[in-house]
Length: 295
Image (cartoon, rainbow, N blue to C red; front, side, top):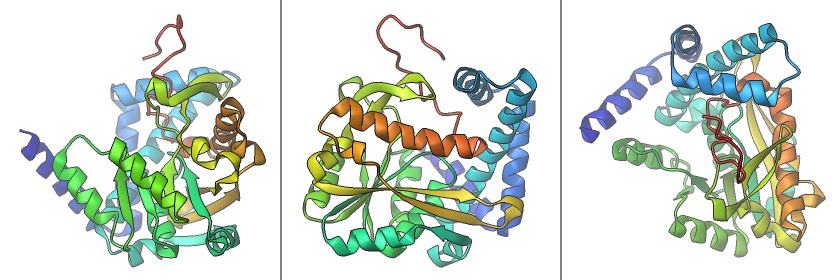
């Protein structure tokens, strides 16, 4: 059954990749619209997250954001299918603007370890191609449950000569070694870690379990950090990559200060492009002791 499910998902991705980009985005938006119209768990998770994180919105404003978020979620799915299946050059041609690229060049020329931090905002698969076309990093990722899909993604995500590391003990060690020897890595900072691997710090004013992994690698200036995101431009025009220097607090030896600084930067980006964040992710699944579960 698992093999059948994997083949079905891979076939679905291949079908998307046959479409022109604007068509793929349109089909993805249609899937997102169906997610908004029909009962489903993802929509309920989006509503729960937005109700808690953006209480300042009226009910009508929040529902408009729920709809926009689900449409962008569908677009992300379609865009990612294309990014996985197309030749990287075809995907890279969709990046129309880059802001702050000099920061990456400066960091690479410095020869110290480089940690590029991203989140589930915009399209991280397109970002992966852009980043890997500039250097040969190790990309940290959480493997999908289906083996066939994991094998496909490992193959497609390494087309530009980079490596990938799963979120396992071995993967963590390989990422740390790469940074220590002056190499570059890419890490999504917002997936919820195990309790022992994270701290509860504010995200939209709410305690959110956030990984200590990145701050621990940066402590005391052992490596340099940049934030990278790939945002969707309106009207199917493609994408904009934005790079930003990490704030000094992220290098602090105080874990709470460092992890909080990382969370604050991600929150700022999400507030600027709220519909492009993956609000369907159960970001607040683990709660502090004594607090009721959300989902």
